[in-house]
Image (cartoon, rainbow over all chains, first blue to last red; front, side):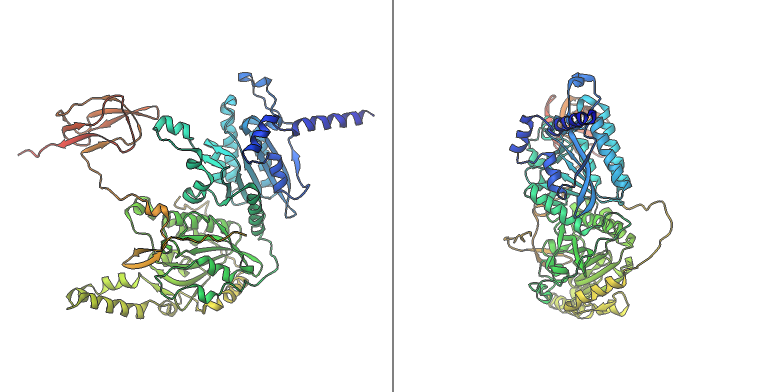
Length: 514
Length: 115
């Protein structure tokens, strides 16, 4: 009889905490177009799969009258559940409880679930919606952030870490998402910045809104801090589910294979690419023409658009794609696109995802701003990432592969496993115009009609060097293939690379040019 | 799932190594600021802040390393020093004035080469 009463008491206690913040705070949350933390977890996980822990955790703050305050769950909900039937760990900050502010116990709940995720080798999904540090708890809040950052770093490259920004995420708090693999943002809801508009106004006299400073569009299009942009929370959760369908659960597993499907008929690979190397096309259509079901899931779609990265499947296996995008800035490599490519290559390498690279670029972006922004240091990251990667690496040279761009884009020399070139490929030390101007400078200058001579020499150079056969003669490319053969050749290359094994020299860790 | 956004803008000419490419240029690229050669005789605020003290007047001779003024920013009193030997040509700000990053505050005239 005593037990029944105790069960009743448990139920009552649970009910009390499950309410979260007070009515007014919940209504305010809804008015902003936001779901509550609990609703978000339900939307994210498989039905009825959520198991919550640390429900009754209470804060220990004593100063500033904090001892009189009850904060349900201390402003964060943690637990485990499943997505696609597979286990994941989740935390969701509850803005309705003290603004989701991070105090000592709040951070301990998060670090505890992070430790579980790492131990059990399952993905960690963090939903961020917090006003920042709980000032009343002083340095304990900072300690909490630090403990989280440390664990983010420890888990990096072992388990997938996903950050979902569904509210403010300001000050030191931004660095946990920044340390994770993928950041999801939602229009008008996500706000990320180190110093907010008020501080900027007082210190610098510059006026800017939160949205303009660190809204979802800013991070999706300008800073590159976000990997996925959604118009509402529902779309965001669909994107997370889709991402999780492509990636493995930890670094010792391969992504799950699904049934293979042919590409859709709408993408006719031979009709996508114009013959004239100076004319643009959308390289994503080339990717769609070779992947299963023409399903290409692009990452960082809005940022550094001159390079495309993302996931697709070939023969049911997940593949990471890196491709120059001639549609934007002729597909040049620059500071941002180098960073974008390098971090994606390292992600795929860490999680056993083979890489397919499509090459069509005139080289690096010329300009004082680029040189002064450190294009040398940033460009070096691409060389480092490709050289370091030991997953199967396949390269397809579509048209231009000039100069340093040729070397950087997964060339044989950086140990690509298979390098294919279309007959339209131009593999040369630089573009025909530039090369002819240098090599035949004297002839052009001394000719009766220099412009005519220049054109003639460009043509000569083009015929002789702007093709794939010079590189093929040296074995730098493995095969010149018809565009229509691309999928077949890649499928085979991926299949024979299944058991690829290479070992480099032993080291503590390399020194990529951060 | 996602609709492909069609870019309605005109494709533009873009030159790399003497070759003209037709392509879209993102806003960030089009709005980039042109490079300007820094002028050694113009002393500028390296950080936004407030000028709290001015040590020099127009016509005053200064040696390289002399204190020109104090720029308070980020709770720090930063000294701005003369980058060369010369004369103060113009003081462009007053004590108490707020300045933005890169704003010129003092013009110097380089000392003439002595015979």
